Length: 239
Ligand SMILES: C[S@@+](CC[C@H](N)C(=O)[O-])C[C@H]1O[C@@H](n2cnc3c(N)ncnc32)[C@H](O)[C@@H]1O
Image (tube, rainbow, N blue to C red; front, side, top):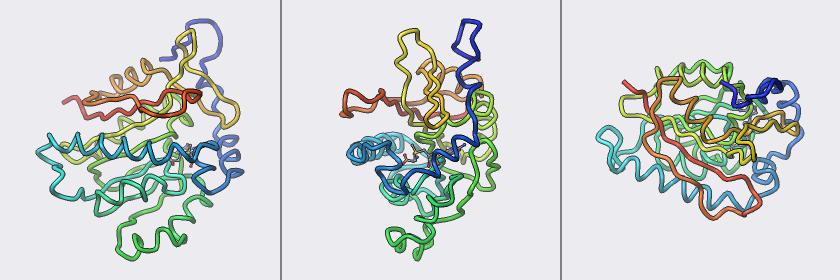
C-alpha cells in the first residue's frame, strides 16, 4: 500500500500517536493553532467547501439543498472551526470527533458555540482519535479535514470500511487534505506533528481499496503558493 518503492520504511510507519497528541496538546486552541500559523486561509477554505457541498447536494435526491441535513460529523474537529463556519449551518446536529480535550472544551464551553449548544445543534463529542472511533449514529456527511495524516494507511483503510456502514443512503464521506508534492511522488513523513502528507494517487488508492468511489473532487483555489496543494474529495460506497 505504501508509495515507497525503495527498501526504506514506509512514511506512515513513523507515525507515533503519543507524539502527535503531545504536539497538538502544545498548540494554541485557536484558528491560528489549528491552521499552523495561517489563520487567513480559513475563510477561503470554508467558502470553497461550502460551495463544494452545495454542488453535491444540488444533484442529490436524498440530501437536496432545500432540506437541512439530519446529522453530520466533524472528524478531527479541533476547536470546531468547520462546525462553526459550515457544518452547523447545513445540518440539524453536528457530532465532533477530536482526541484533544482542550480543543473540544472550546465547543462544549466556549461562548462562540453557546447558541449552537442551546439550540441542540451540537451532538456527541467523542474525545478519541479516528483510528479508535466507533460511530454510533448514521450520518448524511462524514467530514474529515486536515487530520487523516495522523493515521496510518491501514488505519485509514479500516476507518473508511467502518464509516461506510454509518452513512445514510446517498450520504458522503468528504475528505479535505494537503497533498504531497514530493518530487519522487511519495508520501512524506513530518516529524513536527508525527503525520504523513499523502499524494493524490495514495488517497485515490485508499478510497478504492475500501470500496469507495470518488463522486466529486476539486483542488482548493486561492491559497498562498508556499503551502501544500489541498484537495477535497467526496466519496460514496461503490455498491
Ligand atoms: C490541522 S488541525 C485541523 C482541525 C480541523 N479539522 C480544522 O480544519 O480546523 C488537526 C487536528 O487533528 C487532530 N488529531 C490529531 N490526531 C488525531 C487522530 N488520530 N484522529 C483524529 N484527529 C486527530 C488534532 O488534535 C487537531 O485538532
